[in-house]
Length: 309
Image 1 (cartoon, one colour):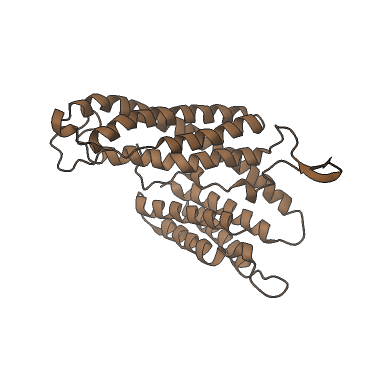
Image 2: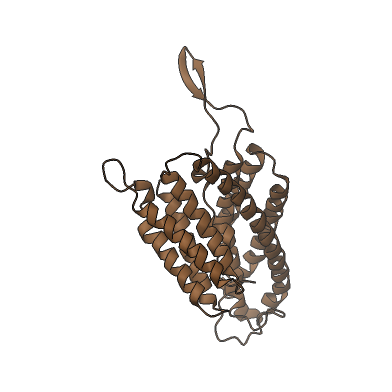
């Protein structure tokens, strides 16, 4: 199981509002002679809208689920056999609340029923949700067991009995999460590229172009620097490219000379990400701290892009 400090890249994807129109197109009808906006029948949601629902599910649930298991593993004597009963600190296990799983399930249901079919992604999403539900159900009795102090009465007997089921569920969830993350990441990249191509058609680069370009170039840079085997020359090239785009975005002004509100994230969040990328590019191999710092900086960059509109 991975540590809580690690941030998986699929959790950092752009919301669909940055990519294309997310909702259904409105049509004009009449009611009592008055024109009204009506929604056409499903499924007319875009793929970008569907991706946004799935990304929301992933962002809400995945890190929390992994953190619960990682926190549990941090205090028990053995991941193989479970708690020994001689641990100095009894940390229990954080609950994965039903409302988190239910919210994720609701988002998935909307994505499947109102969005277009995306066979590989749909399969990965269903497997992910099933694994998430199972993990939540495995965690719940252990959470209550330790939170209620029952382990003091039975000498950790039930804790050890429930441990194997939790570990198997956690392994299944890890596999489902990895697959879902990979497919979701690939589909989102396809949409980012398509949107970037649309925005590049014009002679004038607007705020929308810079928002998508910074997200895409930042994502590409993170993917390179996540590995310990990255090329330092390629890292320098990509960092320079990101720095040029960030510089242009940061100096962009409205016709009245005021800063562009949609780019207000650039000076702080894009700058912080750039510093984290340079730090990572110059560190020794195997430095997990610089990697995690880079991932957190990219998460903050994407959050800035999504909220500055």
